[in-house]
Every structure is written in C-alpha cells, then in structure tokens.
Amino acid sequence: MNSKPRTAIVTGSTSGIGLAIARRFAAEGCNVVFNSFSDTAEDHAVADKAARETGAKTLYVQADMSKGDQCRGLVAKAMEAFGSVDILVNNAGVQHVAAVEDFPPAKWDQIIAINLTSAFHTSAAAIPLMKAAGGGRIINIASAHGLVASPFKSAYVSAKHGIMGLTKTTALEVAQSGITCNAICPGYVLTPLVEAQIPDQMKAHDMDRETVIRDVMLDKQPTKEFVTVEQIAATAWFLCSADAAQINGTHISVDGGWTAE
Ligand code: NAD
Image 1 (cartoon, helix red, strand yellow):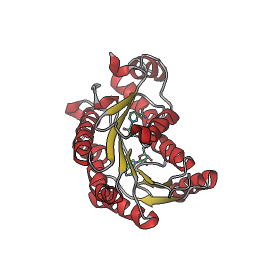
Image 2: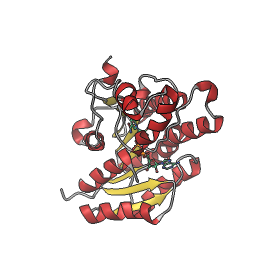
Image 3: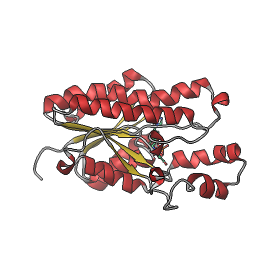
Image 4: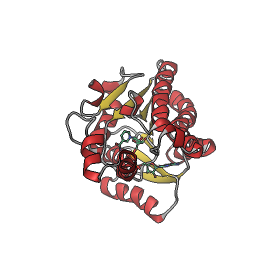
C-alpha cells in the first residue's frame, strides 16, 4: 500500500485490550495515538516501543477519559500531530464490583464517565474530522455486559448497555458519510482489569481464587477459555477494513458463546 497511513486513536491503550489493538494497528501501518490518564515514562515507553517494533509513527497523549474537555483534547492533539483522525477506538474502561445498595456513588459516576460519556465526547470531536475526510471508523469496546447483566456490576453493566445505544445512534447519524460505528462485545479476557476483579469477586461470592475463575468468570463462557487480547485486536482491525464497510450500528460478540445462552 502506498496510500497515506491512517491515523488511529485508541483510548486507554497502555494495558490489556487497548494496548493489543494499538499494537496491531501500528503493525498494520497506522499512525497510532496511545492514551491513558497518567503521564509517566512507562506510558511514553509503551508508544515508543510499538513504533520501534513496527516502524509506524506513534504518539502518547495523556488525557483523562473521565473529563470531557480532555477527551475532546485527545482528538485535537491527534489531528494536530498527524493531520487526520481516521479510526477512533473507545476502549478506556474501569470496573467496580459491589451490590447496588453498597455501591459508592463516586464510583458510579466515574464508571459512567470513563466507560460511556468519554465515547460521546471523543466521537463528537472526531466525527466532523472524519466527515471532512470522507470516511472513518468508530469502534466502541463494549462487553458481553452490554447485552446481559451480572450481579454486583450495576455501573459497568449500565455504562456498557449505554454504549450499545450510543453505537447505534452514531451509526445512523454517520451512515451516509463513509463512517461506520460498531461495538465489540468481549467476554472474559484475561487482562489487568479482570485480574483486579478477582479479589473483589472472591469477597462478594465468598470463594477462593480458583473457584471464582472457574465458577464465576468462566462459568459464563461456554468454551471455558479466556478470550485473548489478540483476538479482540484482530476483530477491531477487521472492522477497519473495506470488507466491513457495510457493517454499521451493530456489535460483534467475542465471548466464547456466553451470550448465546
Ligand atoms: P485494563 O485495565 O487492562 O486497561 C484499561 C486501560 O484504560 C488502561 O490503559 C488504563 O490506563 C486506561 N484507563 C483507565 N482509566 C482511564 C482514564 N480515566 N482515562 C484514560 N485511560 C484510562 O482493562 P481491559 O481489560 O483491557 O479493558 C479495556 C476495555 O475492554 C474496557 O472498556 C473494558 O470494559 C472492556 N472489556 C474488558 C473485558 C475483559 O475481560 N478484560 C471484557 C469485556 C470488555
């Protein structure tokens, strides 16, 4: 390919699924904007390493996805650095596990802000740029919890159901602009986010680690295997292809059959 590289923003891409997507996009020749809320040497090193490994241009931009102005600023900085925003992956997400009656209100607000409202802000900033360029791709990393619920995850399930609605609405609005907007709904992927839930789940269910993994987490996943971050990255890259141009306003489940039940 000798066309101009596409520029991709992946929110929350210093770890887990976002990191795998950002690395895959760099390997495919995209300019990639990495992001997280912190601004450490390690954060910048993640983007630099991907550039060294792939030869792609990468940039680390600190922006807190719980703050609307910083979400919009992330898109502006990507545009300033690379001259286009062709792909936006709304991936940043956090989790908290507690019963509704014990759920800290500040945690609720934080989860809704990072897992749902950030995608509104980044999409609002990116869509005019994509429209002006004649096309683009918006991919929202939802979850099986965008389709079904589990106990003790009220804020997360609400945010993920919300992002399914945002995905459909955005898709309808951009359908004639060469832009698609879709969601990916992973089941359990073994990332730091999932690792961090294990102690809370152990407490909530009064179980040991192995029992939580087998009976709570992979209990839902008929394959009894965790999804890999590379499988999510490959699905995201497919949604960026020309072959996926008519996939719009829907989701792809990568959950080992969880939501088939
Ligand atoms: P992770 O904890 O490994 O990575 C989350 C990333 O988001 C990190 O880079 C973190 O720094 C960043 N982040 C957190 N708060 C942020 C903020 N305020 N501003 C900017 N960045 C922030 O998590 P993960 O498991 O890779 O999850 C990524 C996405 O995939 C999330 O939206 C999550 O809900 C979704 N998901 C994960 C699973 C799973 O099993 N891991 C399943 C379904 C959906």
